[in-house]
Image (cartoon, rainbow over all chains, first blue to last red; front, side, top):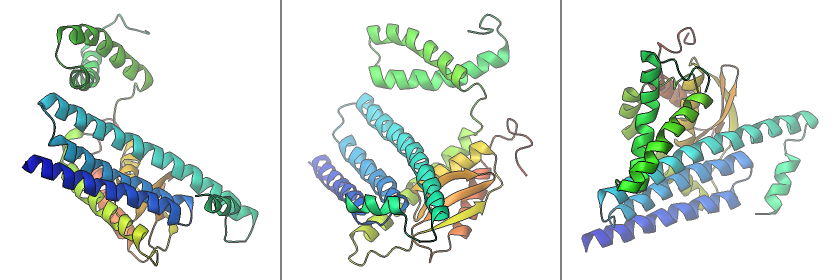
Length: 114
Length: 170
């Protein structure tokens, strides 16, 4: 009973963080800022989700699988976030060289389609 | 397969350092049943060989000190998530994004570890390195980011395996 309550609270809170990550993608002005929302909020969301599900795990093996999912997703997200960030950083520098205008044309078009 | 027939103790040690974690992962994935063990007995050595083939240099981090950093890392990433969620939901969208280049005196593996850590901490996102400068995107320039990065750099330095990266640390 207590385990079920903890699962509901933890997974529910986790969903809030996924929602925050999505809100950040839509509302933040440029690629790099959006990455902040994606990596950080979704990371906490996944952590809470896994923690909530852990209370439903029937045995240690399932617990281990949940921990493995969490760890692998964390490493994958951290690595891809750095790769996307590096690429966004470089294209930002190129567009800054192209024009004195502070606005990045590539990012303005991105802003147009959420 | 190059040199696969000549065994020396350092090679066996290296294979064990790669193989044991992989074996644990296999056991978690497949369970301890009979058939799973048979498949694992083939897959784990293959995966170990592939790992050594793709990354022969070894992982330049010490896992003891890294594990000691883990609770702080979990806590900081929780703060980071709450911070960015608050900003994403806030009606006025309180962000002031900017880019910083911060000189970091760490070897390659340490810079990557620091970058990964910063990306989950409040307000910072690593965008790779330029020489020995770490490229950091900041969500709110009003915070003293450089001091926070220095603090993390000091902590990460303790996890670097100096024996394998000698000369890289200044």
